[in-house]
Image 1 (cartoon, helix red, strand yellow):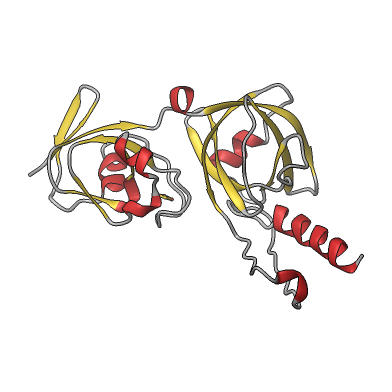
Image 2 (image 1 turned 90 degrees about the horizontal axis):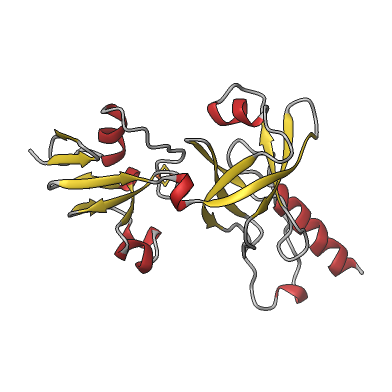
Length: 222
Ligand code: FES
């Protein structure tokens, strides 16, 4: 049976075990959300061979550096694994705004240490301590000076419970920037538009899509 090595620990797992499950079952806390190769909350760095169901989900540079999505990998041979460390691997950011849009929707604004290039519809993994969760960006690229997120806090949750305690000036770390929900055809300005956006964040929200759609509507009806 192949062995997993994490720091000083090592233990045997069945061939074909899902890497994310094998790590979490052994007490190595690797966050996850989608389990589908989309959110990138489960990034781990690997040394050794592993069967990866979705290698195209990561860039060649990330793969060459050993990064893998644990939810998409099956253990086939001995493997050394290092979990994503937000203090080492994440981008520092600071809370610059936190207020309630409604009794259950928390608006969080962050200032990253350096500018982020993103598109409407993308989501970003937020790290509060060792708790990670992907949230869609509700700020407008190239327009807003901050990153904005709308967090659904209706239900208790590891991240939303921490988010309720956040104050201006608190540090967070940013992980992977992913996804993209907007699709334009080259001649979109000459054709009827169907503007579609969906509700507020339980991980992925329609915040920036709603604002982006409103901007397109203003531009096309002017
Ligand atoms: S849990 Fe979302 S990519 Fe692995």
